[in-house]
Length: 279
Image 1: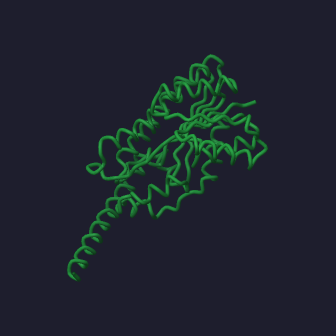
Image 2: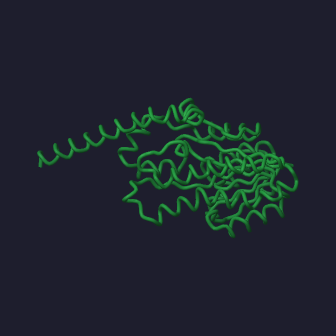
Image 3: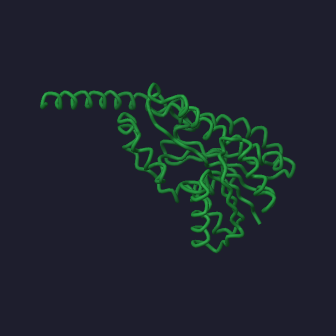
């Protein structure tokens, strides 16, 4: 029976991916920081599929702390056997202009999104190499393909995931280990709703024109890409073109973004002037 380990599996994309594998009858190990959310996720999976609680293991751990996630994965493998599929989905986002984003927030996003992915991969990689089989899916982001106003820390962390995946793919391939990375767009998750409240208006002007994807659709494409061993998994024409033809596409997007940001600034200045005049 396939053993699937999912970091960030208690909610959002990670949970939606877990739902697909639960319906397939896989053994699931879900890792996240909140024990309470993990217990809720386990109960939902049991209620919505033929899975039973004994085939879903939950471990509370912070992926940013290497010893924590390594110990959690070891316990999962002791219970369900070696990891066949790792989906590194744990991530956080805290938008904000660079000068307004404190060092702790910047570091936390790098530690969770990038280092947390590396920690999870390191915990399963040697075993996969020895067995000459295994699949690794890393969750980057559309923000891992293009710098976005107000997302300097998040973009940096997701670009780093992409670079890590590129290098590891070359190392892993001769050993029978499949490495994939995907670039989801804005996705309808609880974290996305929290993110919107903190998104700078310039970023909202740029990104607000793109409708977020349903989380189930994102999860289906991730699982399909993992099944097929695709290295890069894209969502929508714009991200596909950006991923495949970045040197040609990025200047056009930057030109459009720059114009939108200027318009947003002019609108904000005008609105402040009207408000002051009325006062």
